[in-house]
Structure formats: structure tokens, C-alpha cells
Picture 1: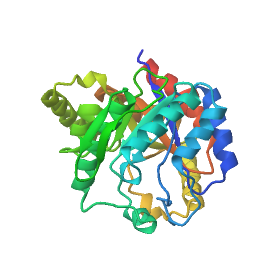
Picture 2: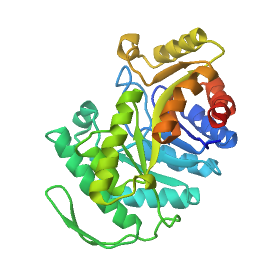
Picture 3: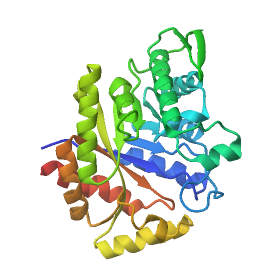
Length: 315
């Protein structure tokens, strides 16, 4: 029997606050390991001008009304904030939650929200990934209680020290993304958790690339928790699951032409979902995080942990 950890990411767009709060409480009681939300300030599915809530504020509110579930952004946009501020926010969340914070971070990709808010987006993905590598290095040191002096074109710190330290002796860092030259090297250097998503053959290749980066930097790849990103809808039949999924996309003003080729949407019965998950577990993905659009689908949330998890673990 293999243990499977489960997380849920609640889309922060096209919803009101009360459903986000009540669903967080439900997930905590159901026994999920992690609870996540996005770090976006424009909606990323469908109409960008849809209502959307800010991620760190959501996490702090959830921390006050939950008891056991771990909390993080999947993933924080590095371009939005100074890494010193991010480390302070993560430590503060850790205290509010009693030691349940995860520092999720990635390079950021949604140019429109940067342009609209006057945020520096960078010249290229490569530059943003260089910023990410520098930023995560600074955040790790600050969370570990070290003094940071760092001077680069992007960041400038002189003898920076933070107090209080997090509640956790080692607050975990989650890095999202699968870029082979830079992102996965940063994962190898700094990450406690890695989030990837995509078809099985692609993820098998990404795992091999990550293992090589770990070997290059002298890191044991087994120190990194592999997390698989999916988007589940679970029903008694695949047809019914697809119907519910399409209704959710309509509620998020998202044309089916935008998502019908997205391999991360999995619609089916508990047995079908379990069957799709098993080969990913063989690759080392022992944590699965499902993104859930509003209106939040209570049946899927209950059946994922109540039916799919036991099936996978018994295999």
C-alpha cells in the first residue's frame, strides 16, 4: 500500500468570498493535506475582468478558520513582489496558521495583468527565470534565519535579517513549472516540493531532467516532493462528469475551444481517475493537487478523497 497525499486548489476567480471560506472549512474537515489558491490579479480563464481575489489575503483568512490543512499559493508570482517581502509574508502566514504555511513560487507568465497593474514583466521568460532563481535563494536564506547581502541588477539587499522566524524549523518551498534548462535547475537547488502537470510521457521526461539537475548540484532528488497538477470532475459516469465540467467552464466565461485540448482536465468515474493516476505514482508523484473552479463541486471534493484515494492506495 502506497500513501497518497491530496491537495485542492480553489480557483479564486468567478466566485464570492463566502463560498471560498466555507469550502476551505469543508476541505479541512475532509482531511485534505493541502489547500491552495492562485496568485493572480486578473482572471486567467475566460474574461480577464471577472472578479478575482488576491492570494496572500485569502491564505491568511483561511489560516484563521482551518486547523490542520497546509496552505500555499500555487504558485506565487515572483514578479509581483520583492523576495524580502515574500519571505516576511510566508513567515507571517506560518504564525497565523500555527506552522502550516508552504511558500509556493514561480516565474509568472500572464503579461496582461502585469501591463494593467504597471508591474515589471521582464524582457523574456529567461530573464524572469533568472529573477526567480535569485529570489528563491534569498527567500530560503531569510526563512532559515540567515543574514542576506545580495546585489544584482534586479535585487539589492544589505545585511537583511528577519524576525520572527517561521514556526516551522524548515518552511517548505514549492516551485511550479517544468522548464528544463532553468526552472528545473532552480527546483533542484532549492525546492522542497515541485509541481508539474501534463501527459504521462512528458512528465516522465521532466522527471529524468530533474534527476540530472539534482545530480549536477549534488542534491538527492528524493528530498523533493513531486506534486501532480490536475483538474478533476468526478461522477458516476464520464458523460455526467463532462456535463458538469462544461457547466463550470460556462460559469467561468471560458469557451470550450479554450480548454477542450487541455490534458489537465480529467473527467470521469472514481475508477477512471484512479487508473489514470497510478502510472504517475510510479514516476514518483505521490501528491496530487486538483484545481477546482467555482462554483465549487462538493461531490468531486468528497469523492476524490473518499473514493479515489483508497483505490489508488490499495493498488
